[in-house]
Amino acid sequence: MAGAALSVRNLTKVFAAGGAAVTAVADVSFDVTGGEFFTMLGPSGCGKTTTLRVIAGLEQATSGGILQDGRDFMATPPQRRNIGMVFQSYALFPHLTIFENVAYGLRLRGLDARAIERRVAAILGLLQLEPYAQRHPADMSGGQQQRVSIARALVYEPSMLLLDEPLANLDAKLRVLMREEIRALQRRLGITTLYVTHDQEEATAISDRLAVFDHGRLAQLGAPEEIYAQPQSLFVADFIGRANFLPARLTLPGAPDAGAIFAAGATVRPAHTVRLPANETARINAADGAIVMIRPEHLVLAAAAGDIACRVVRTQLLGGLLRYTVQSDVAPGPILVETTRPLPGIGEGATAWLTIPPADAVLYHR
Image (cartoon, rainbow, N blue to C red; front, side, top):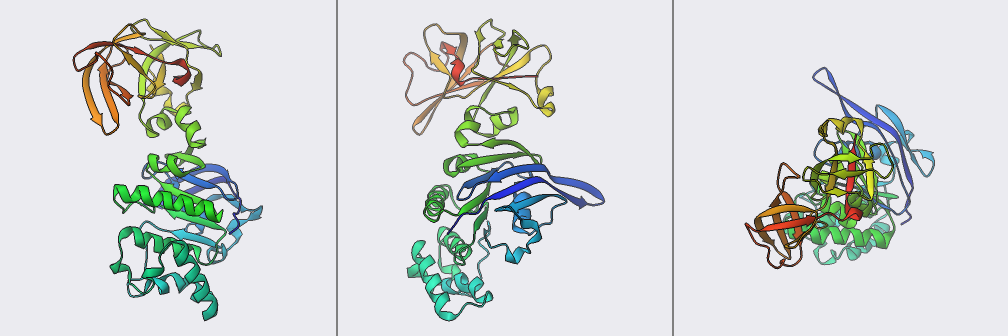
């Protein structure tokens, strides 16, 4: 299957709700390259599913455009867009066998019986579903039913695969297994894939690139590792993984190499500096002027001297991870530190020291 390139330009979708206008998607633009695994990520109601439905033709855009391989995609009727769609609910016909569920779309397209049998057999084999061809959906597990819905979406060789929260109804272990199966299948086929989820771990684990949505707008676009290390807003920093936010004052305000000084007197010059978007400047206290973000696994906690004095209030063993919760004068709330092994001489109630590696910190200011 060949992957198709997609361009979304200034896409806006406004719904009328009880006489009021609700903007679900606001001026969103992005490009997806052929064969890419592209994920739209964000909390409920952020506009990611609406964007996917507009691309599929299930919703009409209020304004903006969509191009596929340079052609006006919105001028193409939904049934002719050659898109495979996988829904959260599986949407299988309970009275049809697995073979007939997968064959259904091909029968609608008028393919002859021999071609249908050949294509369905091939896709069932690809997804390891051949032994279940004559079963009904009720006789299969949730993971197997989701594989059937993916087989049905792929059997007519679409140019793009669209998945809307496909793993939301599965338990945690099965979600991890299925996301790896979906990613491996996408790589094998080379099909352009647009994936929607609210699960940031799921998104960062399988995607080539992420589009993070916030209140209908595109908050950040980039590779998972880039967004995790250098989030361009406090929302993205907080939504992708765990983060500590430490209020600070700017040193050398306005300079490109501005640093930060904390209430306890310690200073740091983060490698990354971000001027906050207008909608987030109110989150910074005017007296402070800045916030330093540092991930729990990047903070260094030691019994000997460091940058910032603190007190350990809680230790938690979380599988292969040990989390220390500490309190310090530099932050109004708890600070999290995560390590893969216990730290000598540091237990609950102990006095310790924090060090912030500049290369792993991000400085946000007005």
